[in-house]
Amino acid sequence: MTKNTGFSDKLKGGVNKTKGEVKDQVGNATDNNSLQAEGKIDKVKGNVQEKIGEAKERHTNKE
Image (cartoon, rainbow, N blue to C red; front, side):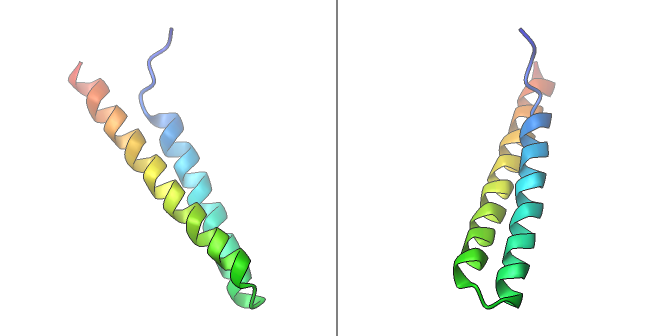
């Protein structure tokens, strides 16, 4: 079994943050409040995933 060092969580977080920023900006430009809200949710989800990845890295480094 491989160790999860948090890299995949950080990567997924970065992808979600980028996807969310695009949705947020497109929603803003097209006056689409629903798309803009989805973007904001994706950005929050991405931030949480990155924090989880960072915590896993800290935990792995202590072992």
